[in-house]
Image (cartoon, rainbow, N blue to C red; front, top):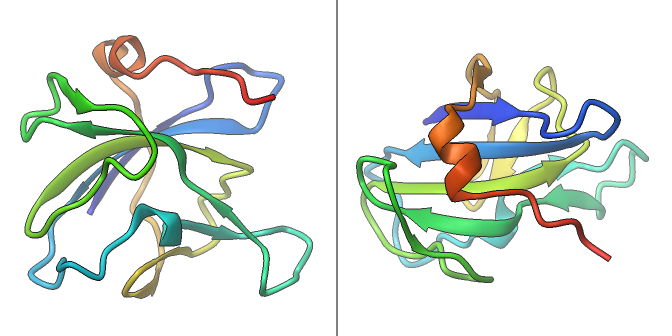
Length: 121
């Protein structure tokens, strides 16, 4: 998995996450609602999960679909989403367990244009 992150506004803890999942194990069980980190409260039942997701083309140059539950499939998946309170030193969770995130890279300008931040109410 590769991970590109950015904070669209310096005064927030909202981060754009672009990921390319490469795993032989991605199957019909995969759901983006499992992707996130445990809440800082320490409550194991609370997680900050991915939202405002976009399914990207294999090369990451275009958006195929941008709506809830659009990131589906098997094999290699490329998507972008937002995470509140992302902490790179804490594990990420997904359908198949936990993993330590790879080093954070700056998000390319084209991705911020493809998947602009939409404030939640």
